[in-house]
Image 1 (spheres, rainbow, N blue to C red):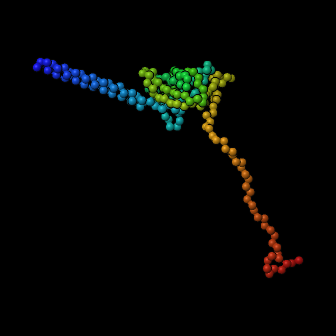
Image 2: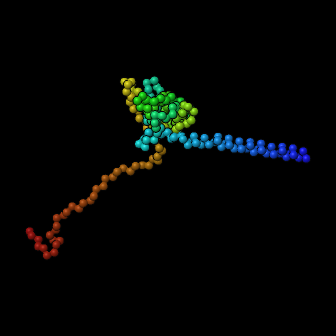
Length: 200
């Protein structure tokens, strides 16, 4: 009798341990995936600034006299988390340190290696505190402001052409001049009208 009670007790204990382990695994997996999904939903799209005032956004790119690229951004508010910027091409990722502009707390500029216009690039704004991605975007640099060699205090714009889409080369018809025909009035022939007498 004692043996049966012992086996029954061991069986119940094993079942309880299995249920507890299964419950812990379930709760752990649920809490582990939920913050990641929530964090992903908070990522903003990073684009060029436009009339829709979507922020954060990129205002411009420029190159200073030392060959460093400056990225000028706008953020939604002055209490936006401190961050750094990464720009990735197909083979390299560069980090850009960012700081606020004095007297304009929603204006940020980031400094780092020069990237070249025309190539699609991946942009990520990453929070300094916990390395979470705050905003991301994929687009090409379409223009750079270069330092003026004659006067370092001013900059001159270098506008680059955006990539030209592939078009089929159909011949363009040349314009033709159309002239509307007009009838020139002729003098009436007196003999062509009946009952008229021709005068010498």
